[in-house]
Length: 358
Image (cartoon, rainbow, N blue to C red; front, side, top):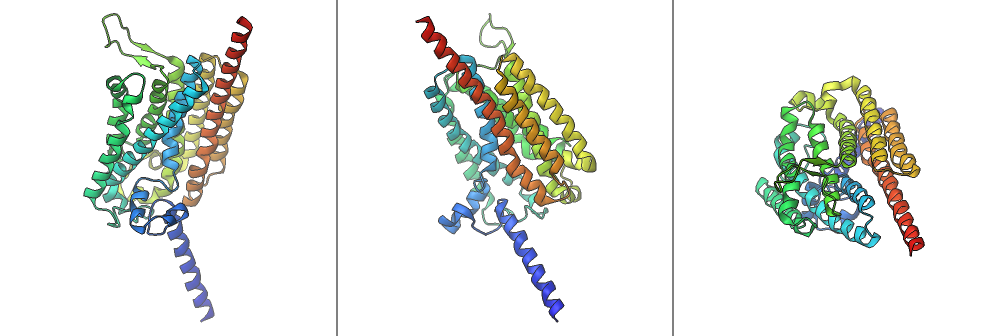
């Protein structure tokens, strides 16, 4: 009888632990953290927008930060201008993050209902209707679009620059059905923040020869390297994230690099890391960055991702979630720190030389 009770108790604790993990991954009815201060009826909408924890928002904002710092280094803009632009882009990133996560859950709802980790999300558990979710995502998309006229290039040109990302984000939920590499689609969408961040500080990353008879196609190659490095970073962490649902994804037919490579995923991740590190080093050479950039941005991000690849247990959902939700701070923080140090170095050098010249 005692052994039987122990088994029941252990099972209940396991179920409670599982529910707690689900609640922390934008599922279930449990209110945790700052959401305990909100009315219970708001919880499903907070979960739809991935606001607790705000990992999605941060992963969208980080590429914008990279782009803004990169452009600030090229243009030598003032710290005050960079700060104002950063706040503006944070607002735009907030509404963009809300819109794309709600849209993704809306389209994914039938598949989410078949996967253990996601079947308690707001739409599958019928806490939010599909019509309400659609209205919510439209409102957030409109709010994000309102930031486009604030960019120095004006609304029309900003919209044209944003259009590839808009199309990519719209298509992304179906990529998991159409291709074995939806991580590439996600990477291109997220890395587009580098393009928009650069544009927000007044640097046009490319021209395609459509703005006038004398205009020729042009690409700013250092921006391209930073963009591609961000694509590879996304593929790395999202492949680890995808391993949480590997068994369920195989059963229901969801495609991903995790499903494609399975037990050979770490070999792929190491190759991607080498390419990403090479791109960050190439960026540093093209942008004429100082040694601190190479140590902090290239070195720090390579070290953090290498640690993740070495330490993560791809057969454990908990391990995959921990490294996904914590590891991006180390990598994103390293790249941000290296670029910020590069900006400070350039700004300081410019000020000193200006003082000597006067």
